[in-house]
Length: 292
Ligand code: ARG
Image (cartoon, rainbow, N blue to C red; front, top):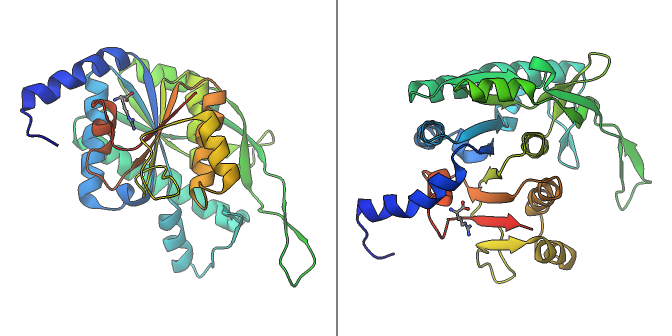
């Protein structure tokens, strides 16, 4: 990139600030950006800056590695089916304590230290996330008969009541959400953070959903980063196998958010310092923007 002065960079941001000010942006925070101290601080600054220029950031975080650490200390071996953590009651207790406690509060404290006004909550607070049990999955292994595996207390999002988020955002707070939900009979569910972020984005009528991952974005067969992607192309690339592995659920999450009214979904590499600002306030961005 050619040398540019600070004024030019700020001027490039101006139309985006004007366009996004007053709008809600939901950010799924996870992966490396949530572990590395330097990246954590940069993220907290980005969020604080967004709020100060009138954008309403809402953060939904993950915490898989942190949960595994605590399970490990307790002598519990994590198990997964199709990427879902098999969650019995004891595991659910750990998930809730770690996500809603330690992880959530450390993000809140980090943002507050940068001068943001963060408030932590889980899907239980204000009745934010009504959950229902995910059905079991049939797992077929070559040498065994198909088996129905029950992931236990893994939840799907049945409905979202965003009232508490409107209250907080309107009063100048930045909501930081742990992806734990409550069932109709008061049961606690562990819910995938991407899914929670996408459903909250649609319930809030968010202009954008941003998924922070550990890769640059969606790449084509030759490994080139795709800066923009439309729905049709994304579907075709999943069908053809060009989009594969861990990128499939990310892109599917993006497509489902778009079909539920979110305007744009951005898949970014959270390992890039200030990834949020670089994507939101430059013309080129740094990741993949998925739109209708
Ligand atoms: N800053 C603009 C936006 O957030 C454009 C971003 C373009 N990003 C991309 N990956 N092509 O809407």
